[in-house]
Amino acid sequence: MPFTFNRQALAVLSCFVSAAASAQAPSAVPELDQIVVTASRMAQLQKDVIGDVTVIDKKELQKAGQDSIAETLARQPGVQFYNNGGPQTTTGVFLRGTSPAQTLVLVDGIRINSITSGATSWGAIDPAVIERIEIVRGAASSLYGSDAIGGVINIITKKSGEDRAPAAWANIGIGTYSTFKSSVGLSGAQDGWDYALSTSMAESNGFNASSPVSGSFNRDADGYSQHALSGSLGYRWKPGHHIGLTAFNGYIDGDFDSGSDPRVAHAITRQQAYTLTSTDDITDYWQSVLRFGLSKESNESRSYGGSFSFGSLQRSYSWQNNLKFSDNQNVSVILERLEERPASFSSYTTNRRDTNSAGLIYRGDFDAHHVQASIRNDNISNYGNQVTGGLGYDFDLNDQWTVGVAGNTGFRAPTFADLYYPFEQYYYDGWPSGSFQGNPNLKPEKSRNIEARLRYEDDTTRLGLVVYQNKIRDLINGYVCDFNFDCTANNTDRATIRGVTLTAQKDFGKTTVRASADFMDPRNDQPREGEGSVLVRRAKQVYLLGVDHRIDALTVGAEYQFIGKRYDDVANTRVMGGYSLLNLTAAYDFSKNVGVQVRWNNLLNKDYTNVYGYNMPGSNVFVNLSFRM
Image (tube, rainbow, N blue to C red):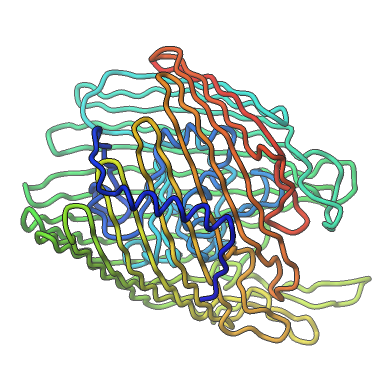
């Protein structure tokens, strides 16, 4: 795997050396461990998770300021992103180099990937109403089914737990590009009831989304307005028995460039997710979790050339039985059904798809040995069965060092557009100039992921090394055309993504230093004539460095990001140069109830892009005033 080291790499890697050199230093203040539910579909401490998992907590989300959820995700190891000129435009997230459609995205455990395009409506999700985000890297279809080739991102909005006093919070902030954001929320739990409600709104004039080299260039600024609402209501009607409802509704109306016409082109996107869950301890050894989920997405694009819309609805039903055989052995038996229904301006040749699934997850801990195994079968209507499996093993070398290996398989079912798009003839000056239609004979994309891990953790130091390989076959090429430019979708490609991720975090009293380095080789294994061998828009090197220092009620911080060069076309002829960003943060608590947070992104005003022809923000500042009661 050819990697080239530069001064950015050496600067970041030096942090790993210093952290490792002081790994045995004693600790004064232990850090509370996160609870993770996505990695095994059962609640467990993050330190006990088998796999490569990250949790972005509420504190980190608050620190993000004006940034979108995609930008926040991209500050985590193994994650890259792109957009077409702002958070309101087309946005994609790469997890370990897999395509945006190859990562399963959940809201409170309910899938929200579009069934028509495979994309995720990232712009409609405001970080202000999110409690935390769990990232599971590596193929996870044996846990969740289709789409989880690169991993799973679970966006969690709900709050639950034992009795707690009512609490309220609010934020109001302003920033560059006439950006204004506000949010408010409350939560509590008493006498068996638990509740949480939060809402947010944001507006921004934005910046010019496109540059003159883009075919859609327009000189105007491209802004957006955004609204979101999330809530939960639950009741514990007797010990061990809880019923709960969660709701999320996000909306964004954003401008985009569509040529020189002075009329504004904009797109309206809405994302909704609702769950109803009954969790019941039938016995001391048997917990039953019944869940109904509903997610809806709608997208409408309006420009001077007309408008079009598409959307989808997904209903899911699941019954998960968590069986505790002993204090260190657990089995989950899962039965699920997914109903997918598209809504579009085009009438698909098939307008429904149902998937019935059965899965088994085993988790065992035997002194220094830890095992997780999973197997799942997804039966897709008009499509057949897809069987996936996973096996992970961790061994504790001592109280601090753990080594592990894992192997998992994944798959992604084709979208409705890939399979069932109706025949459509294209014309130029009144003459036929090609056509497109879906291909109902498409096979699913399939992957095999293997990885090895080494982890060190004590009260002040965390070190990690992950080496992985993900081989993907039957990749779907959405536009395979003949000499008449008559096009359809076909399984034509194979890819191999190999990578190494290094992570480190060290507390030096009141100072915390974080660093990560990603080295990746995303290869197209079967390039056709006119294609290159590197997958588009993936950087082979990414370095992240951060530091926070606390001075009584004041916390100051700095972040450094380096993203290496990428190709923006399949031919690998259009190079987007690497870039580095320096961000500054500060927070001051006037009291336990009032504080202020400041974020200054792109301090040096670097001119960069992650999609050819589209701009990224220049130097920008956001100031937020927070209230807690």
